[in-house]
Image 1 (cartoon, rainbow, N blue to C red):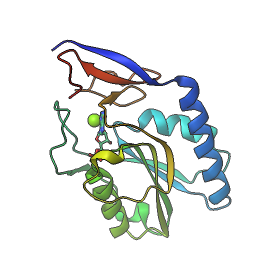
Image 2: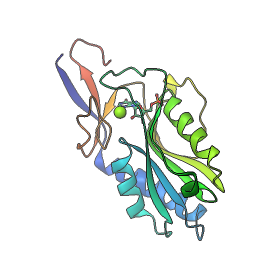
Image 3: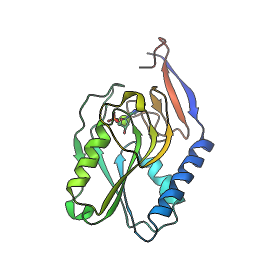
Image 4: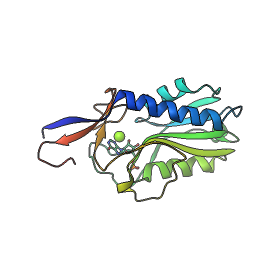
Length: 181
Ligand code: IMP
Ligand code: MG
């Protein structure tokens, strides 16, 4: 199927959003040496930019991985932890989970439950993008970048079938049959 990319969020807007989130985290986590946990793979670009904008010393940066959509643009309805962390890594830490996009909420909810079991001192969620239209599981986003419409997005770490992660801005992937899914 042919497709085209239509820019939705520019590099400038992303940078401003990441800067704003970094400032908020700096303020809330001053002297707390927070631990950032990114969800692979989609958050890797966001995490890399966010930590370089934060001034508060970060105690640790870790990643977990959950199963994703595979090569479909529709969520399978289940998330599975593929790569986790030892409980000791999390226990007693001020953890901020970093997600690229909260869509159905299934991935984020699974990740939050997993981290909570490991007994962090505190646990918050920071998401660059929120697509509330498709939410199936309620998720509280403590630090939100931008709300986005119900479109399939790529770029800035976010993929379709593992492609487009390298794009510096965020695009709608439009299928040329008239639909975008
Ligand atoms: P959820 O479990 O449905 O909330 O989906 C979360 C994950 O699905 C995100 O971390 C993304 O990796 C992926 N995802 C959600 N929406 C999109 C999209 O528009 N484009 C590409 N990946 C997406
Ligand atoms: Mg994905």
